[in-house]
Amino acid sequence: MVTFLHAADIHLDSPLRNLATREGAPVELIRNATRRAFENLVQLAVDEKVDFLLLAGDLYDGAWRDFNTGLFFIEKMRRLKEAGIRVFLISGNHDAASRITRALRLPDNVVHFSSRRARTIELEDLNVAIHGQSYAKRAVTADLAKDYPPPVQGMVNIGLLHTALAGRDGHEPYAPCTPGELADKGYDYWALGHVHQREIVDKDPWIVFAGNLQGRHIRETGPRG
Image (cartoon, rainbow, N blue to C red; front, side, top):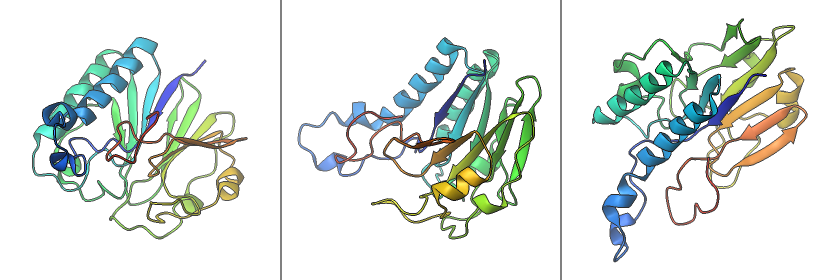
């Protein structure tokens, strides 16, 4: 049986909003929260011996100049490589223009989907096809999903997409599409990012927002990831 983890909206090293204004807040502890959350994700992947990890956009939080963020990510990807775990990721609205993404060389167990067009990666050993496309710029108003490739017959097909679907409160309406349109593609699972609240939109096929790993402000409460 194929096993994988689906995560999104990591926002590595992004500041938690209004943290400094909270008297008595454990600033240093909270400041590193996104790293700890990501480390926990990697540890879970290793412990569960999953076949691959899906990251559905917004790994970084803008055009960061501190490459320690990227080096931290590379270190964790190498750990997954040692465990035989592959990683498939797309860029979303927050990291579309990230210099880190462009400048750092990723380990060969990591596939970063291009923004030029949607493409398909076939994992013949697992009988899985993964389809995805990154954002080329922050504000993508086109329906990216409509140009995703058709499903590969005889394989489990997974779509990796950063979208607000037909709209979600508090989120820009990027890469708009409907659950019905995604279902019509014929994929078995849609791994979505952008919306920070975890949500199973549908189960036939599976259309899922992973939610973010770590709440970024006081209103983002409840289970994460």
